[in-house]
Image (cartoon, rainbow, N blue to C red):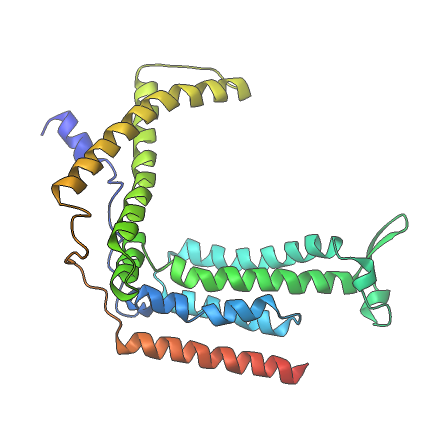
Length: 281
């Protein structure tokens, strides 16, 4: 095999599909719409909660589902757990600093605990708890959205919307074609950078050199994007894209019983968590 052929064979494929998930990772085998519909009521409810227990319960629920049901690398799983904890603590401080002092109840014991003081300004435990509640809500919404985001690819979501929600395929697959440009651009940018290194192009160091490098990448990247867009347009025309109201699907996206069970179970757990939070309040 020639050197060029071996380089092509070993180069990363920007359109490579994710490896199939093992049977135990059940989230990958659910309909993408089920993973959106299930957490959606919880995400809406979290926006209007003001306590700590309710969003914290949804944070734990989302983490458990992701760790048990998603195909995550060990580093990603650790980063998810540790990053969530650190992010909540840090955001609690940043949100707490911006809390209006008039919203803090001075009669509580937490209001008398001063965590930091600069001149006349005081950062109390009560303000931090308010900021922590906001941080927990943000973390809960993000993690609940990751249930679908980390276990669903773009083509799967588009197929589910076209087949199950009856979204016009002209809209769905056009959006999918646009999303496909992102990995292609990443691949082409890597090729352009490698070509510059092979040719010994050196723009120096510093912010001015970084801007100069970006400009030198822009023209070949734009030319590659135009060529790729022409190929995609010709391929869609060759397949009579948009000529008929409906098209046959090579891969079917069915709504199965397990999808209904997942959505119903998630809604029941949501009701239970919210009810427990109301009773505790």
